[in-house]
Image (cartoon, rainbow over all chains, first blue to last red; front, side, top):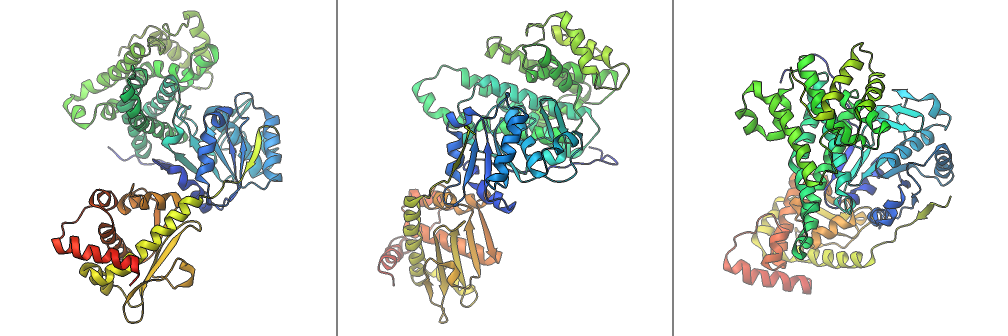
Length: 404
Length: 176
């Protein structure tokens, strides 16, 4: 790979992954001078015993933990202010976000507030609006997520923040936290991760970003289908007994992929597939992560054919080095796109059409595509953007590859 | 706020008792092996005079201290690392990590690879301590269990496997 003249990469997170990783958390918080963390989670975190697992990991440390389990999509500025007061009144010095999506966004917004003043929230909005590092922040992922949690982007109501200071200081991935999740939510996490990683190849060359992206793609292609197959298979008693070991290994890999995709996301601009997926998610019942995955091959084909990007190297993490080397260079990009479409077709069969292959399968109408194209193009200054979005959506609607 | 509560996690009294007993016994077994086992004796002879090391769990978990006195004799020095000037201190990052080690679910090598411990002091001396502990564990544990606790189960002669082993265990119990 050619070394670009200039590139930047930042990943301040310390990631601990594997069996008993939670037990490292008190010590890791200690290295950040944090002695009294506030855990922010949702009701599922408490009901499934995940909070209990975290509390257990703090036994023998003589620390007091705060647990707030009212996070969720309905949280608003009132919740932020209440948590701000709680944090300061009770003397907390760190936040641990346990969960995904909206829960982590709430925790990050609270951390911005407690690291300064609540009024800072309005002032620090936008890209690179935060001027200084925040208080220690840890993230404990569960099996399902948006793959953005480890990144620096936060959307909370009308507020939008994007800063490297929002990347968690500690990420603790423990198999005990990855239990009892709907496999479809895991699929959506994996597809979001795949989208962020694959689109990173289409951006400016950055060897660090590509290293992470390569691992994300490799983990998703190696484990996702097996995970879905195992989760949906008829379970005999012996299978149920051994399930814990095998399922956790695949899940652990996929959650690691999601976290790495977050680091990729923090170092790249949002790609077209991510923007289109988000726009589709806002205008239909389709999960944005699934929408991102559906439009992904069409977006990459557009990059390759219209903009002349050489994306053939994206095949390598999908099939491994030997099969990559065995594929002639001109066939590699086509083979990679075929692999992504094969992944979706398999998911469609395995989930009995719950994971759609195309936007048509997802129940979208052609009329809705225009509004999606305009919404996605609104954040892109290129003049031909609406037309490009329309073309991509047309192809993703029926699953027709974008021809050169 | 209805959804908020403060929790002070309790201790782990039974784990603490188990680990204290294990460390006490392993400490005395190291003392015994230094007298009975030629390889352990050689390892200690190569270490500096009055060499003392501790194995402990953070933040204030169970611990043991073993060291050489002025005559070069190896002694179990109790369970308070603060009372002795230490050349090497191996600290497991949590009591759970020490529990994994002493329930033989993880070997020292695996615990190191999984970033469960840190060492204060010289690395060569720390490696010698790990080698000594491996030999002692082979003396103390039945083969199937010892295989879990050490990286490679050693090939020893019959005398070492039977006579030396029996004496190490006996001396550890008696404390001489």
